[in-house]
Length: 451
Image (cartoon, rainbow, N blue to C red; front, top):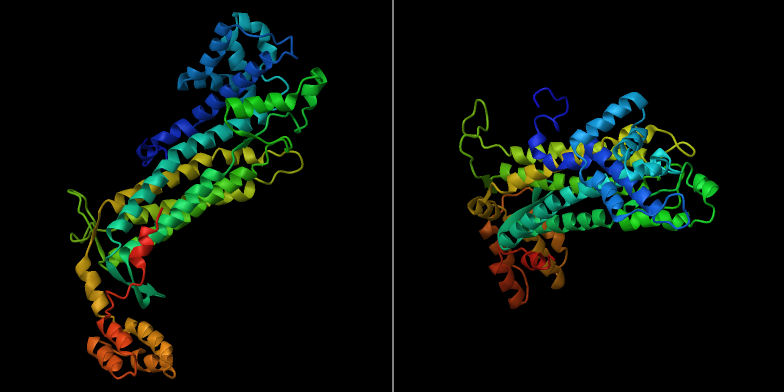
């Protein structure tokens, strides 16, 4: 929408369509209706609450249809009620009562939201939103990991001059360096998936106070657990105040932010390899790189991804440090903050899709890689001085430092130096046959160890 304030709802809306079903106001209201309905169904099935009688199959289906058939148009009805009540959760309760008015279910109206505080409904709704958000985000992470892994396997034998501190260093391979990122990202996706999504349904301060005042014989812990774990597929947290403490959310947001940080590292490395002409980029017909320099094919996808990772992590950082803090048994500072969960997911999704687009445009320039290696014979100082140590030659490091530091070194310089050393024939021959391109250690084998 051209008048949108947020890019997520304007320029980038087409890049995050899945998230409207996860984090929009409509999604929040839909999940609130779901939690309220699941709680009423549980109360009706509890023998210890005779006033909330068992339901007929048709009545149960009617309630479940309130969830299944909840559309944005129905959400607008809830918002109209909220405009009068000025209370968002109470509006959901009244909406459900309106939907069952005049039916056999109307006599059960006062068991809607029974013994609940608003946060019983909200915390479970937010948990469901996060669960849906992860289901949209994780596949993109896995797609990036898969493509990076494929590139690692494809280029595992393509030698490359490494650079530590920006200076020439022991050679590696393109594939092995990409394998590092594939392994790092995979580990962090595992950490995200391992976060247990929690929920509470235990009343105003977490003690089931109101519940027991009406029905002291009911096993409320078990009843709440059935809704949370069996119906909603979350995990029950009994140790809460009025709110679920949000520690798991902090853990989740930190894990996603760490994934994004590693992706930023990948984006910057690929950007640098492009600037060094190790990679080129496939051109897209009609695409313009610069408004004044026609030749340019800029690495905009990796730059876009880096910027959006930063925006996502700024949101996740605040969510992570703010949400676990609530004054005494509850304050409302988390309420407005939680409405921005989808913002962090949205910028992450844009970043992921930008990286995927950039990776799809890469083309390797092996000539430039080979040229750089052939101009960096100084890196052979490492294997030579290591073999000299093996042979017991005095001060090998210092001798190679004197030979190579700040000096222009070529193949003949190295050959002449090695031939003058008192080494075993086998060691000397191995060094003489070695080149910067072949001095890559176990780089290729390391790629093969990727899961």
